[in-house]
Image 1 (spheres, helix red, strand yellow):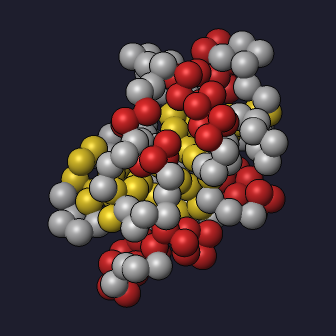
Image 2 (tube, rainbow, N blue to C red; image 1 turned 30 degrees about the horizontal axis):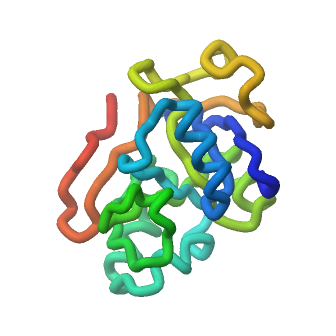
Amino acid sequence: MLEGGVIAYATEGVWGLGCDPLNEAAVSRVLALKSRPENKGLILIAADIKQLAAYTAGLEKKKLKLIIESQGKGMTWLIPNLGVAPDWITGGQATLAVRVSNHPSVVGICEAYGGAMVSTSANPGGRPAATNLITVHRYFPNLIDVIVPGTTAGQNGPTEIRELETGRIIRPKQT
């Protein structure tokens, strides 16, 4: 991942594609694999809120507490983009999507990497998100640099997305 690689790994409910968020070429590669437009933005996933410190530095303590308390609950938050995240992550939007996960694969990768990474569902545009390793291989034969063994945590589908400022649900948790 440090050298521009793209990885696939299990998350709470689906398999994800990840890379170094500060490597524009790696992010472009993820977007190309998914046929995803850059203006949609991407999620940054971390094993600990400290790994998102540069992106959350200006948040009120009560708002930061909401993010911390949602760890392990499959909740992604749209937070104000404080100008730290590059446009290739935010899609040029005024918000940045972040999630703190306790999924073993995510924790292991983020700890080994030393920070938050890009996380987006492992699927080409218009196709269902991969929920198992077989589907990842079918969608991206020989196109991923590393596939981290693992299984999803049993959540049914992608994580819920909420606006941090209003609490408004952008994408509900699938049941």
